[in-house]
Amino acid sequence: AIKAVEAVDACLGIVYQAMHEINGEMLITADHGNAEQMVNPETGEVHTAHTNNLVPLLFVSTRAATIAEPGTGSLSDIAPTLLTMMDVEQPDEMTGTSLLTFE
Image (cartoon, rainbow, N blue to C red; front, side, top):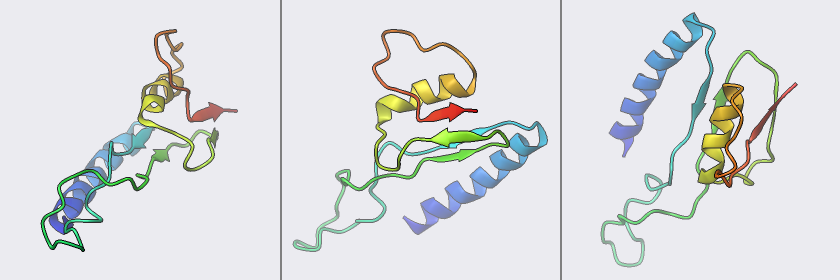
């Protein structure tokens, strides 16, 4: 798990540099947690299921934005948030809501 986190960290650094050079924006998240529990403490067996812990959502930008209350979002909110970042109207079929509001 540590090697995976280190690899992602290195890659995100490269993506961040490229994004910064073009004054872009980044939304970084994951769909589930698992690295924080690799072994079932009761059985000692490898724990492969998703955990119920919250995952981080990082918004990197030079634009000022109001961000939703921590812990209130879900995966269904990611696509609407990306559309908000691109100033694209959300289709009615999307049930989520944007986690960002721009001033």
